[in-house]
Image (cartoon, rainbow, N blue to C red; front, side):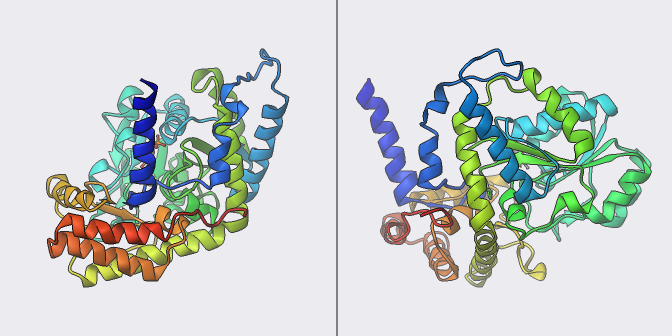
Amino acid sequence: MLSEILNLVKAQERWRGKQCLNLIPSENIMSPQARSLLSSDFAHRYTARNRFYMGTRFADELEQFGEKIAKKVFKAEVVDLRPLSGHIADWIMLTYLAERGNRLMCVSPEDGGYPGMWKNGLAGVLKLKVVAFPFSKHDMNILVEQAKKAVQRFRPKFLIFGASLITFPQPVKELAEAAREVDALVGYDGSHVLGLIAGGQFQDPLREGAFALFGSTHKSFFGPQGGIILADREHGEVIKERICPAFVDNAHWNRIAALTLALAEMEKFGKAYAKQVTKNAKAFAEVLSEYGFPVSCAHLGFTQSHQATLDYGGYDQGRVIAERLQQANIIVDCAVRVGTCEVTRRGMKETEMRRIAELMKRAVIDKESPNRVKKDVAKLTGEFQNAEYCFA
Ligand SMILES: Cc1ncc(COP(=O)(O)O)c(C=O)c1O
């Protein structure tokens, strides 16, 4: 029994950890130091807001330390590190909305919005009416003038920017005024672009009219899997009070230890990291397009984020491509989104983006034997086994 379990973990470490080119934009790797904190003693412990548990001295200190760094990194007044995932951070924020009214405007999943926020997800569970931002698929962005009109017409109580498929900064600043006129709050689900925001290489929602930025800590942000909420004082303090016992009981302090270290890494290395992630994404998209892949938004320079999209017209055809790539140990999703967070964290630059694009071309366009491509994938990944942008 033991060996079966250990063998599965070893196989995963070998395959996804060492042999694959991991291009899923929702994924990243932690530094070895942050990763090791996940197995620290904090993994066994509880704390509670009402001081029910003894023995919490260092966890309490750690939480304050993490919050202090996060406040600096994101220039936020209030921080909470307890949400156990981006989805739970969304849930906390939408519940706050549910008290204020019942209409939410966000990006529809059809346009790359997060399905967990939509009708079959949290909005449905919380009985919120959702209205989609008018959206241009061609430009992969919200249509500002139509959105202003939609805000006036539907008078939502909450506008949530951000998306799962996000390649360009969204018009937060442009729509914040329209939101104010109907007394709506503006929030930003930064699950995907949090690391780019931390590194100052995307938009800065908290300066553009959003009262809160929230989401996952493990996509372009290179922390452990989990969530975070950053907000202004007025609303942030209220939200913070509600988190326990409603949404999070034990906050998983080993995760918070790793997150605190990732925040410190981001403070020191975030700018260089985020710059390289976006440069890599653009370079990668350009070469893929040169090779004949259907990369979206050529007219806008393909992307300004950590991801680019190959438009195969739907998940069915996307799956065919993703499966072919998987046979060569190149891992993408069925959207088909390609992301540069992890390969950048491993130290790859524009030269390697060309090499990856070439490997993808051999697998998908030239239809070369996956086993042959796989060998060259292993050669490339073998050169980049460490994490960069972390303390030595
Ligand atoms: C925009 C967005 N928000 C929230 C989530 C949920 O994040 P998590 O997987 O951390 O729960 C996702 C997941 O992919 C996402 O893309």
